[in-house]
Image 1 (spheres, rainbow, N blue to C red):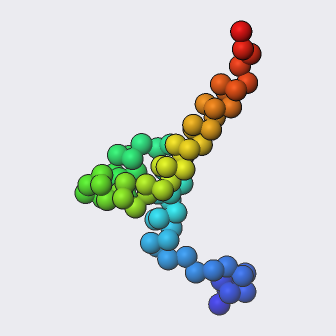
Image 2: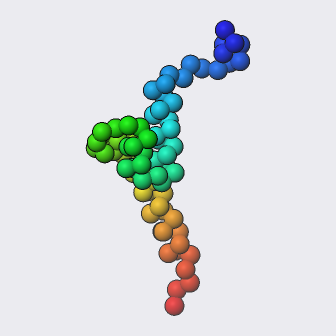
Image 3: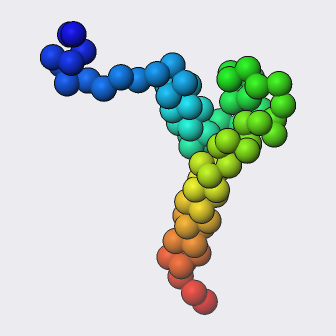
Amino acid sequence: MERENAGLRVVRLHDARHGTATLLTAAGVPPRVVMEILGHSQIAVTMNVYTHVVQDTQREAVSHVDRLLRSRPRS
């Protein structure tokens, strides 16, 4: 009842686990480390579930490189 009074939603353990893995992946933690934290037996399981985060991070990295290259003075 206190949760409802505070206006908090129910967070399942699975949701917290998924959120943690997503944040770790987005922060650039190597997939192998995320796999070990989650207790997955194979890296493929981790990568299949969190590939979208890795792709977003890669897009962001390429965007940074693009900005750096565009800001360099041309000779």
